[in-house]
Length: 151
Image (cartoon, rainbow, N blue to C red):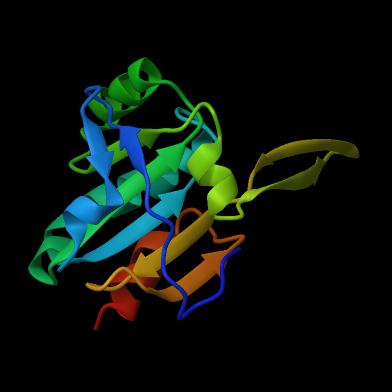
């Protein structure tokens, strides 16, 4: 996980429609950049739906939500359509951004060790500086937690 008060690494990734999106495009706005393991899984769906449900409140506060996983553009599109997600999902199958943000880590599950995305959320300010960072977030509580940090 990257430390707060450091510049957020710049990137460009395709969204669920295949449109390239750059972090630099959001200068002047606060960005909630959240990394999640996999589309269509219970925890990731709960997290995305929570962000979707609170989306109007994030908009009122001038915040942009960007979800990132290693899933494909096509997988993100299905995920967006199934749950009616109103924000962008960015595809990082090469793990470039996932690794740049320090969220690709060793995970243990049921005694098995593997590499994967640790659910992590960053709040990036209008100048591109990381002002909050939360790792191992609880999927269902993350959106409310982030909305609270914006007040």
